[in-house]
Length: 308
Image (tube, rainbow, N blue to C red; front, side):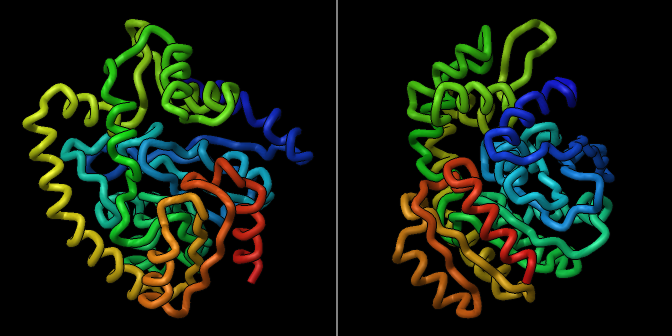
């Protein structure tokens, strides 16, 4: 997919918002081990806001939010997603991803960012802000707190990705997404599939992100799936502790945006307020993918935070 191909939807999205589409270009940074991290830069000026997406998504999940925001921005493909390299160890946790992102973020920005992360991206953003305070001026976490599974409804996601590893067309993938109640409208689902898949040299279509390959392999091996589930259960408590430790170390002001139908329950929000008393919590009447269900409202929150 060329840069022009992946930007084909932006003019229509911008027109629907009544704004002009900014210039956008794709950036690539090579890590010391040869892996690459990719991102989209919106606008000609240095970015002031950096966005990190959730598991199974990619940088384009933020397109409408960035257009509504109207500020120079950076949207990163997390390792294992989009145009960024997969990790051979399949280790996709906030702390590990933060270590991968520190170098490219420093290279792509010239000032501390308003760092916005949703789900897995929120845990990653917190870990970045904790370990590299020079990179984060403010932190906005979208619908995730430590201890909550960033993959969400694991059964539904596993079932969705447990089909074939490749497909004859993107239309097949779109139909599958809609059959699982994913992707929103048919047009939105088709756009999401286009931006989150690639056509191989043999003409077959596959998901860009590593999570689909992992889920597909586990579905084919029930014993491995059971062992993986046990490992995940054992690690969840450790990861929760690590996430709370990250938030305790963050010196930047923190805002939690909670989708009222998302993953962060009212009880989870109470715990968050107790553990991070200086943070603010903002509720929106959405599900987990706030950036796709209420992009304009989320952009307003980010703009207000950025202008403080």
